[in-house]
Length: 211
Image (cartoon, rainbow, N blue to C red; front, side, top):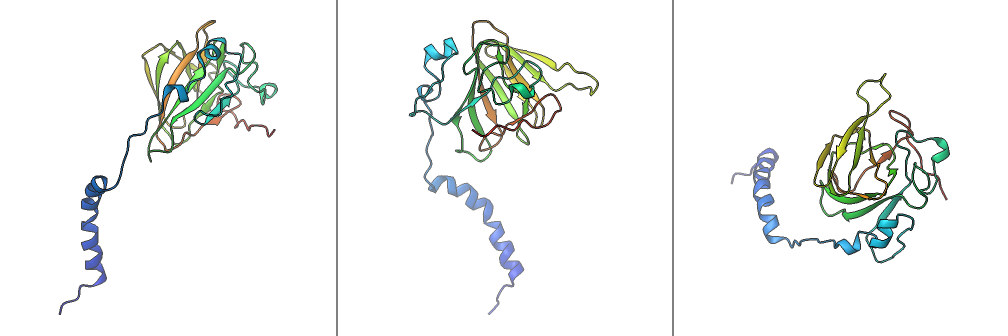
């Protein structure tokens, strides 16, 4: 009786992999995941005023990002707890998980930049990012192309606009409006979002202070 060797067995098993990949989604249980807007967004009165922190405990995981300066972050502003950044006091930038940890190669968050505020300068490591503006208007600053150039490139964003951000590209979202919040849906090319905050363009990583 013929007995195949290990190499033949390996090739035979490998030939079944494409078939298994097609069959598994049909036999394995799967479901649609929905995150309701009420579980993501702060109450409307807090969104408009911009001076209060939503402290509900029944919402999806959230991260409050200290407001950054329009171009750079100084040591004095580090760990400011959200005050400063050229705007009013209180929490000025809010990031909330929308769909995170559900897929291997993508996730979604909602970013709210309140009036006269900005995110810190940051990059997303190996992840690519797509931004969609759901409300408001703002400016997306990106890393200067010339090392001798101090001014970042400006990209105007309005409601309905999309923006693609390559991996490792330093950028910053700025809301120059005096009244309206800037709200973005951010799609990351990873199961969970990566964000590395920087002190300035091309600068060192900004470490968060321990409480």
